[in-house]
Image (cartoon, rainbow, N blue to C red; front, side, top):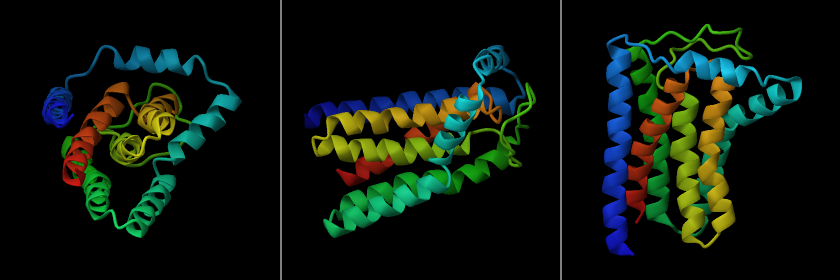
Length: 198
């Protein structure tokens, strides 16, 4: 198992890093993606009041909700003296969200205007901060749960960042390439945190 982990983490780092750099390079060069707008329009075709409410709720789990989950996670780990996991969780989440603001300023990608967005955002678009936060936080939670044999909950936590990313595109505040870049960037910090917590 240890040998497998030594292989999986470097491979995952290479994949996430390559994906992020590929997207970032094109966005920095102001090259668009032909699949961004068609995917947004396709998803927008499913819009309904019920789905609007559900997606707004999902997206909040990577905003104020993420801070609450993070604090509860730290308290739970502290009570169990799981110091390495506390450090890993802090590195993953705090490192990701604190550096993401600088990335947004660096790339300065405008928000999409494909259709009228369902929520208002004022910052730049790439990478998606909600996707970064979700991957770095809920991804780490998934690892914690998996280590403790909570398989079903671990798989739910692992799937959550992708649902958050979907919600951002559905709400019209991000291109698919924004959330893909956010998931990849969040994964880099997640893998760093997981490595620290072993």
